[in-house]
Image 1 (cartoon, helix red, strand yellow):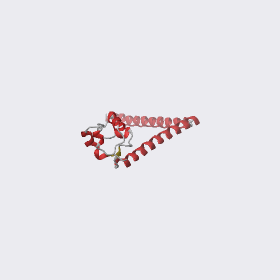
Image 2: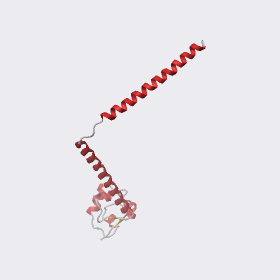
Image 3: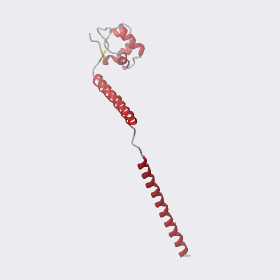
Image 4: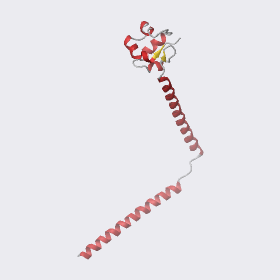
Length: 136
């Protein structure tokens, strides 16, 4: 009886080996076939991929330049007499309407005129006064 069990065990082990070998051969064959049948990209595909890569690099470079520019400007107060609407919108609490009012009230000889000309409220002024300047 032990001999019969041993025979089944040996058959099972050899069956597993055969399955592993077959799976390995199939995998190797698949890699060989796909490696041999891959075609070189056409010149049009190369141009398209190059254009996409160039576009990605250009976009990334622009984002980097904008980040550097913002980093340099972050430590300097924003001149309310020259700031663009987008720059004004970057100030805390300044929305599109407020930015338009600030632009319409130009030029300012001092910051307090933002409140006296009713471009922004006293509270809004308190929130941004350390981040702005009024240069002539």
